[in-house]
Length: 285
Length: 171
Image (cartoon, rainbow over all chains, first blue to last red; front, top):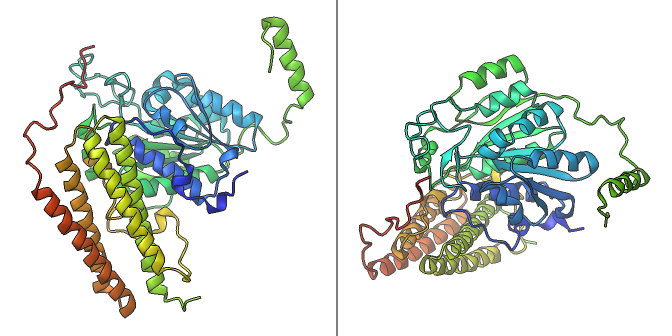
């Protein structure tokens, strides 16, 4: 148990140094996460960062907490399983736009509707950076920087907030890597929200999409309180420019699993493990 | 316990955040440049982090015995999204030259000077104004030192950031 009340943001950073490209927006997300952890005096020993695969999914290694660098697109599957098994833990799941909306798209929509009490941070740079710059589900229709899509992907990008709302996410916010302090505030609010909180972060890829440095000219903070009416939120998410930051939508709804579902006893877990031993021969340590 | 001057306490809380953010960012940039095999920029940023640490210690000394407001990162009031001496991530490039790195640091020192000067000019409390003016002068001296160092460096080649290894590989 750490004395979290005295920890500063830098105390939540591990000894592993990020290898992201200098100028990458993910540094900002990393700093915002540690600032939020310090503000909430989160206990490192009771916190788990879970990710999929991609540049952004390296983040758990850089935070001084428990972490699980998972399978591509499956960060949410692992994170939900963990939270259901150990509801006492604070679980943050993170990944990129390809990981979350393409390979993990199915997990994303079902996580939205299932509403397990965890925070999902999608670090969206509209490109597959780790594999050197291919179009992702959020790449603009005419982005022609990749030789795989020389005339642009030719299909309309997902609107992650609209997708999340339609799938039932009760808490939707957007942040921008150029404003890490606002992002830290949103992450703190997301962690405190008693349900599935989805934070869509516009996190620039300086290497493959240098034009994203122009985002700072067009992002704008939401001036009004978050919407709580899904109809109004649907209109907003379908027609907005996608650059409004802040808490956009929030509604209270019971998270899953309901309190009446009992956590399996140790005996039940041992019996389950024994059944696996019979079928697979794998011994549980 | 000193008799707490509320405006001074608010100012010093901001100064500590400004200096610690600047130091932490320089440290991060140094680590990042080291990861990307740019030892010159890494060494310079590490030196700036060490100097930042000293400035932070000096400011902290002034606050001994004072009760400062405890603020979350987003509760501070800055002219921009981050404290004025904090290097913007997007100004970076893995092949940045020492001159580029110094240029960024010079911009930071000037921004910090401007912030402190503005605070001094607008403060109604003489002690706060005097302290802020002192900090502005210190930042000005850092900027002058960096300016001198910059003048002793050769100019960047027009191709200093040109990629030998274009990130857009043919798929």
